[in-house]
Length: 90
Image (tube, rainbow, N blue to C red; front, side, top):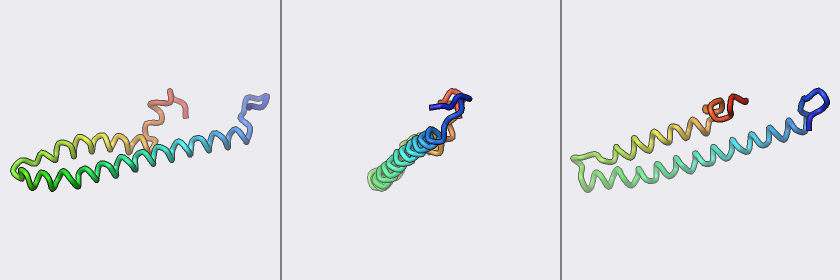
């Protein structure tokens, strides 16, 4: 609820801040799951490639491709895209 001047009350400000912190925690948790999955798969793929066909390092394709997506997810988790997806709002 806003007061007559259009400013948010202290309670609204606290609620907004809590919601923002919870969203940030969810983003970080999702990134944590993503990075754990990435390393778990890479721990399997690299030795598998070295055992089956060491002359052709095919493990690099998923490592680089998935790593690029992981980098984007990291930027999202750190809120670096805030201005792009919020319509210019803070």
